[in-house]
Length: 207
Image (cartoon, rainbow, N blue to C red):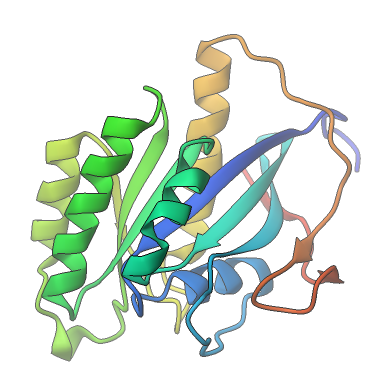
């Protein structure tokens, strides 16, 4: 690939939220550009996807965590070692929004400073059923000093932007701290929600 750096940055990204908000669907939409309904995740599922930020290849190691209450302890093990956290709620479900507040607080209290965080209102295609106004989500994100975006895993709206923005912020954070990217091999695999080791998709390019 001409003009692309040979070195590659790899970052662990954890997706957190209440059961049924569409965490798995968001991750799969980004990796495969497809929408499929999924059974609730047990523990965590692992996917990877690569993007280009400028000329730098960036590999996102996406951990899709379980939303059931009984897995909260397991989820905390994943976000404590993550470089980025995506906190998802369902715009049609007030309970999931309240739970998202709790997750943001919990991550900020327990994880190192500098973790890249984004609050995401999913199911934006269900506008007629909306109970959480976009302004309400934006205000909550601003109060915590984190990013905000609405998405629809069903239509794909906002999903590429979510992960590309996350990758860009991670690269910029490393550049500010003068951290050199790690050398990684090119790969794209999906586990947990699909067959182990199944290769799908390709490297996505964004400027």
